[in-house]
Image (cartoon, rainbow, N blue to C red; front, top):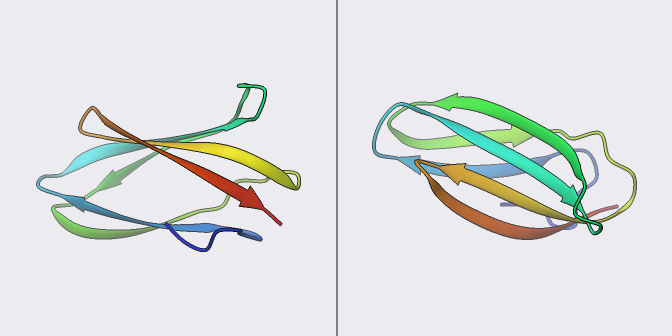
Length: 77
């Protein structure tokens, strides 16, 4: 995932063994959901661009691929 900190968008690389739907959720530091999206990906490496409309600050990004959840701390400039 890059860049971090980000200005307008995040680039996320997803390596998938099959076609599936990937979900993204972004929560603020109070735990409130501020962005959510689902994207269909194909088999192999997928480059995704996520463009959440967020205020400046620190957030938690959850990426769910095939019921495997990855969590990242991201900063919006």
